[in-house]
Image: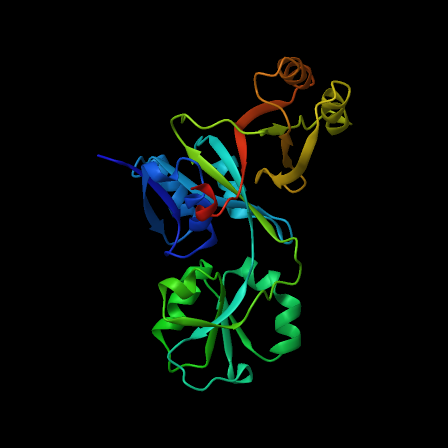
Length: 290
């Protein structure tokens, strides 16, 4: 049997676009799932070899559903990261012969996509009804299946190639520097091409009775000149005010300085768990790879 990749579907999502741009994509068949949890569970249960899920957007921040599952669910290592530039479009049925953007009464899309176009929607369609879906592609599919309705979807240009849709308005995102990070996850390690960038993501749980522990944790990396690109707190779900801390480090796990930093942090009574140490890839359209 061939190897398979799970992604947030249906076909035409940004997640699929990111997955297909991975350097190993040609060796896998692609299987869409309705939501992020289903993707992660499918990989954990070995229904698929690997999966791709969104983890962070430069405008809207962390995808908490993904991060919380990686923290609280069973261990599923991060194998790679890819950053994808995001361009949102307003899509309507191509079966409409006459169309006026002001005729739109409802806009459907994923909550993050709607949030990324908040200013546009407020200015152009201030009274429109918003309906959230599990993905931008699901919104596009729903709009295409109901051409008689005054609906529009916020989604990718790829959706116009998959579904009978046309673009009512292009590049409607509020900010031009709109980029989403995606994680490639899997139980077994993969042979991946080398990359100019690498990260290690760790989860640190502080002792409840140690004042200033977070400062000491950060100091353990600072004096070793280990660079952090992100630090974020997430509830432990045990008590109000109790948090895990997720840190992205610009170092490989086998870097000579990393074991000493981890040992110093654990000596403080902190728990350290490695979520993944992985190459970071930049998005390249398929036609640029050939």
